[in-house]
Image (cartoon, rainbow, N blue to C red):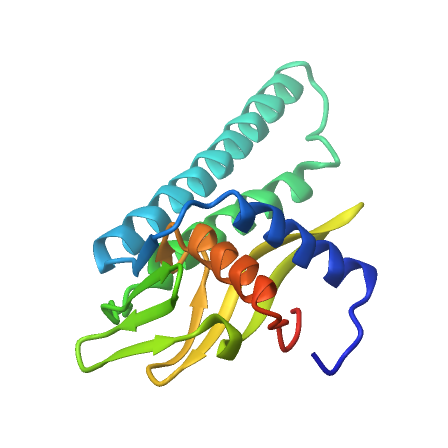
Length: 190
């Protein structure tokens, strides 16, 4: 690897290595279907709508209570209304986010001898020592966590994590751990 990892990047790599060392090979993953992607996004949209509805109901209850007591509407009313609007917009965005999603029908198998990537047009074997990949992370207070990897192959770049691949994080961690054991380091951490 050409770059030196900072502590957040190294933390994400270490987290991925810990996960990957616990994965029993062979492990396989596949891209999520359109129905799976839409179902997950719509469940999240429902949560946004529920939160927005609860905010609106709380706002109405506070307004009715204040007005019946002869008081003016609470000063926080615009903030509550804005929160409800943001939740509604978030829900609509989640609902429509993958309306044009098309399943690429990619399957990845991680075995002791390497990685096999299959799509409808081709099959490719990649030895762990030759795998080109980046590590995906998210940072929170106190550390960074492993999300998945971006694997380069003839089918394109595969963003392997749980939102796009069924059990993608497990397969990605297995690739990271086996590539590390073969002496291959990630190209970068993002």
